[in-house]
Length: 333
Length: 279
Image (tube, rainbow over all chains, first blue to last red; front, side, top):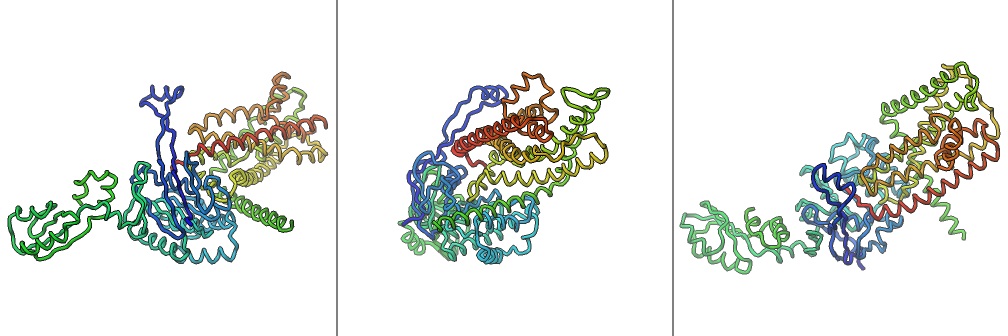
């Protein structure tokens, strides 16, 4: 029984068009032209309890809009959503008490007061019993290591500390479903890792269902087994991360090291040369032929070392967005 | 039956705790921008002093103007200042901005009511303003020693308890309705400024409405604004008869219901238009 279902989910935004300049502004005062932007266009998926899913896509692809519809902030233009058996946009308090949405770029903590105060407010709002509150807060504070900053005015915290406190505020009521929109944005690498470790831990420990959007492939690679790729409001891919590689990567990358120099032409017949700088060469070989070509290379050329790799996931995803056309961008990496 | 009752009592108790804590939090946040708040109070005191001295000048050599003695007029001015802190002080003027910035998402995505959220924040703001205006007025009375016409603790003062809650709620709903324009436009301050000007005159903040020509006065009484400050002040100064008092209270309640209903309708429509922008 899936915990989240979206069926033909669609959201159009009405945007008014304004011509540039003062004249345009005046004109828009009296007569406004509207056009529809398809932020999310006919997306369907199902998610089981305890899954940790990564939503990826370029800016403006519709990831955040999808999250907003799932959490109940936005009213879908058409299609159905169900989360935990509720229609999110009705915002039944019974539903809201079981979910949480964290937006990396925005805060729910009271800016002028210590984080602790916002925590207590959430405890009251979510009606968390005292005992449970103390225990959850203790656990979270320990996991995220923020004991020292709880009584500091939120505006004086660093971005990393604030993000951690945001997460705590969002998790105090132990939500069964968690939506994380860019939780690592703007954080340094150390903090990004801490955040990732925490999310993975939380997912495991509480069997919470988590949907995460991120620009950082690292987040998705480390955390999500299943990936949903959205582009231009359309669902492009839904499946295991490694299936993307099987589906979209047509080549493997062979990195070679040679023991003596030889003319470039000799290498060219094995595959497309990406770089050639004695003693190293990188060539691209179609997937089916990769092992055969490798064997041939070892036989005919003075190979000292050979390494067969999948192309980097970033490059594959870029290819997915480009509709498979942009080979050049992919191979440059 | 008893289970239902238990559930009802428990949920009421929890709601009470939620909003009580919110009031407390809003109260402490109010102290963070001390200078801001103090300047706001200074502005109100200066405005009060301006009309105080203006009226004092107008009364030079006369005993009565527009049916007011000097005592009554000065009492009205001071009373209106206190009532203003009670009825008009609000945090909910931020609502439009909060909708525009998308910060509203934080509220509607949690099991809390937006209407009660802002009412709680207003309550904190009113308490803060009321305390300050109480101190200010007391100081002014001590320093200026104005001749005041205080009708004493009469039944009309008791009826104030009946008038102030609906008047406060009426303003809350008007204010909230203006805030909801944030769902459709980013230009939320233009209508707000207009409202402020209208309030200055029609709510009776500068002068009691009955100094105006009868026709204008009659027209004004058909709007909701006089019931915010002017009417409660009149009741408190025992300037109205019992029948007028009850008529006024009824009008306040009717306006409150009208604006309350409008808020409900517009809020529902607004949520559908809400883009949760920037968030």
